[in-house]
Length: 216
Image (cartoon, rainbow, N blue to C red; front, side):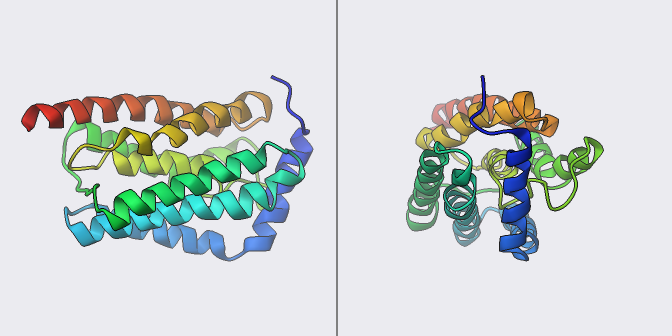
């Protein structure tokens, strides 16, 4: 698929964006570690706070990355931005307002895979980026750019202690398919992990939801 922008323009967006929002990248990492710590134990308040952090990531990326920066080279970014904002709103309503999703870590296959996704988004993803020749500030950063945030979201949701509403994962799954084009066309090989997280994460959530329904 031919892109409406060049590889140089694509990484140029990251450069201008990272300069514009500094030091939000550091705050995003702090919030990411806070979310992991809170998700470790099953508490209603902790679950609300975790979902609030995820919602903040999605809304921030929708507004500040997609609409205010990526849209300068790709008109479709307006649609992407609206979708990310909608996902953030959904996470807020479902996770913060209604407290429908709670979390805890268990030594079981699904939560362990979720932990791997989170570690990939926060640690492995940037290390692979450096290995593939991507250097600051022309890089996607955890929590403030779409692909690492999407991978992290799937990881967190795999720690859910109950059923995950499927409408919560529709936009992340769609982005995992759309965003994978960057790995193919824009020389971002670390984004292959996005496709893995989206497809495997969705399948595991379906398995987990089915298991929870059987217990009811």
